[in-house]
Amino acid sequence: MPNIALLNNVDHKDLRIITANRPGLGDEVAWVTTFAQEFRLLQSDYPIIFRRAEGAVPFEAVALMGFTENENLFLGPEGWDAPAIPLMIARQPFLIGRKGDELMIQVDLDNPRVTRGDGEGEPVFLPHGGNSEYLQRVNAMLSVIHQGMEAEAGFLWALMKHELLETFALDITLDDGSQSRMSGFYTIHEERLAALSPAALHELHQAGHLAPIYYALASLSNFRGLIDRKNRRMKADAARR
Image 1 (cartoon, rainbow, N blue to C red):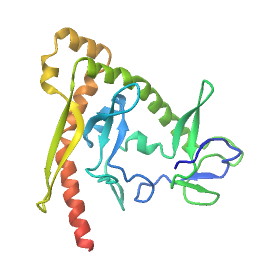
Image 2: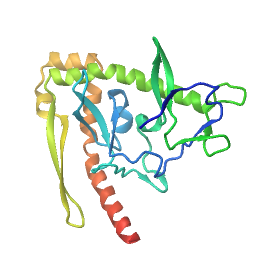
Image 3: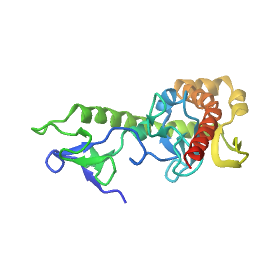
Image 4: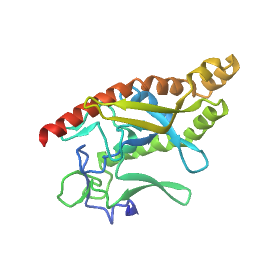
């Protein structure tokens, strides 16, 4: 269970955060939540798809990094093998909280990236209590995430309004002959998108939704690369046995 605390320079004056990307720091996940404003950055490396979600909006966008639970094919002993790391990964162990109407930074003190004193990692606060450059970068990152997630509901409702989400299944055959099927996710329905009226397309464009729709579609070409990563990972694991 997370141990969430409101970040402050008294209780957390000696806090440090490991910023390296390597196994064992909590990044072993197969997908991570993303948002339309981040699609441009992620679409060259990760398949961007959608899944059912609980809450006011019944869908969410995710960047796919593996095919099975706790499998991140971009993460290895040498680090993260992609130019861009999804913001919901990069912001760990911090998250956005509220104190009344004010947005505040929270930290999960039980996250494996958290150390204390002279341990490994970037200091969160300066010796006299000011914010470190690292914390300033985190604050900017959390601001982008907050703004992106605030706008995400409008994007997802637009997809539903125009019936642009469809379920899909991906049949995977690996080099060793093993087969599996990935299902339960959604993607953009290209035929319905192409059939939209000029007025509907103009509405999506004016709202800033059309570009991320096309980024999501373009990102599906990354499934081939993800399967290649899976094959390489399996061969490397077999060679170590």
